[in-house]
Length: 248
Image (tube, rainbow, N blue to C red; front, side, top):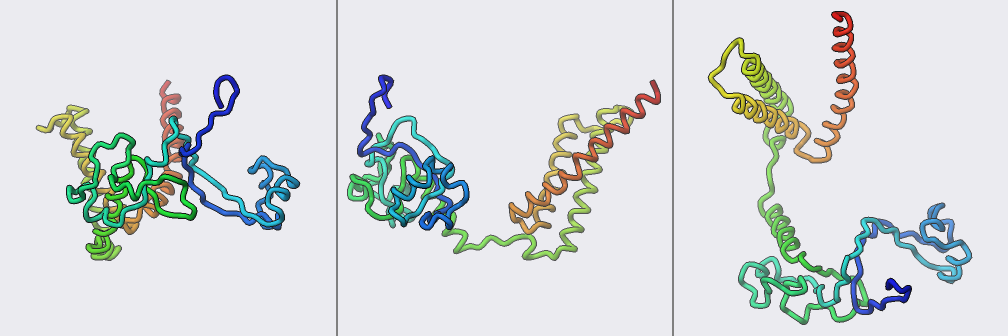
């Protein structure tokens, strides 16, 4: 809508993007979620009139509205040769610095009208991203990445974790000596901090291996540890304050 209240025609442009994570069958309405009317901003009669007794509704998330609407030509169909040629200097149609963000110079792949059926499209600036994802998927397929847990059993990984925890403890003790100054160490304060960070990193690697090097498992494990950390921190502070009051 324009500032004066008039409508701006955006025919032939793309104004945004979103993710459709669910599709509801809305006729009959008892197949739809209870809050469908609120989500659709329509009452039951309007929904029935619009669908004529049969229809579906998209549930969308991650809505992104472009600051400037994009022309359809800024998008192109996915090129099947992108993995081998695109951005590697092998495709004569690759545009290094495209004016509209479309790196594909094969104008036969550019969109000049809305697709009449679903299809894979690549948007502005996504050429390199899509290529990287394809390369990564191909490399993972050709050269499967082994995990530590594929080689070492859990008892050995636990042993490694115990060793890394001991080394982290030693690094913390060395840092304490440096800060305290009563028992000198030739290392600088910065070196002591870096040693502690390295050992904590090794502890984290051991936990990662223990949880199968799966990001979700690692996150869940660390989150559960965090659930213990918060009340323990409160108890620690309580004891410190209690001691402070006793000596006041």
